[in-house]
Length: 402
Image 1 (cartoon, rainbow, N blue to C red):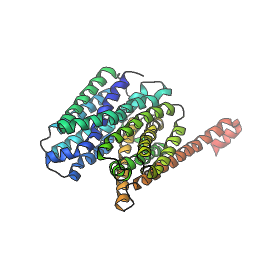
Image 2 (image 1 turned 135 degrees about the vertical axis):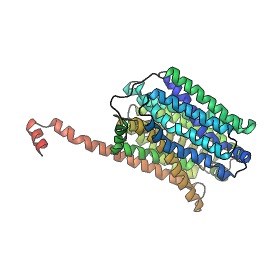
Image 3 (image 1 turned 90 degrees about the vertical axis):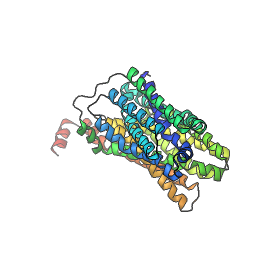
Image 4 (image 1 turned 90 degrees about the horizontal axis):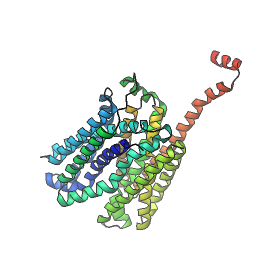
């Protein structure tokens, strides 16, 4: 794998750390600014909304800039946002810093996926995308727990300063290691937008929303589920999230490897198994050992679908994939927001802390059905050309006349 993928993975590591570390530091931030925990939660919501809207916006603004230069600009924006958060004199300023940093998120992963795929042979594209996303998954194993510990021991401002420093390292890595890949000739914003007329692109994005939403329906409420149902101590939640992160790392690499060999079968297996495991989590959540194993499996199966889903979008929008790739990153965050909301609804309705697992299972099953629908439509669309190819010249003329 080219060294350029290492630079992309470092940037992904910093972005993944800043996205999730705030969840462990909300009490400290709330105390420092004198706001409530729900108010501090806007730092999470604001970031997610920034990713959703920033992905297409930043990618569209960068259509006239080389992909390498755009990646550098995005990492610079990421550094500025995290420094603003670290130095914020008031809560509103920190919220602005979080939104600024989030604007880089979707576009970096979207453009980075295209660059990673362009760096390798056609049969290794999903593996290259997975290598970049490894930075995001490792962030959940190393960056988030370590950043939380540093923030609790030495202050949350130091955590965001370190994350900004990671952004500087990522920027230098992109500048030194990522080659200048010329944009395809004649591709304009209207060509990028035309990809959204393709039903297969929209189906792939819908699979992303539902499939990854299934993961976060359960993981969003993992703390109350594990402390109230499984009987874990509050301090154990961090290490349970590390298990989830380890599963993400393994699943991401396996998904990238096998998606290059058989993309749709990889989606069938990962999404189908994810639906089953999430449904079983309603039972295994009552046992500490089984709960830990299930959490790792959810991380593995959820992220085994990420490289094939991202590559599916690139394949279907092959003429102008950059904007579609970035919007698909926003789709992951839309899935997170949707599943968290639905999970909260079933808990509020009195169905208990394990009820979001059923929501997640239903969402993953919905993604699986869309995968079968997508494959069926693809076979149907390719059938007429195959029939014509095998027909006699007279048959072909009749078909054209008809």
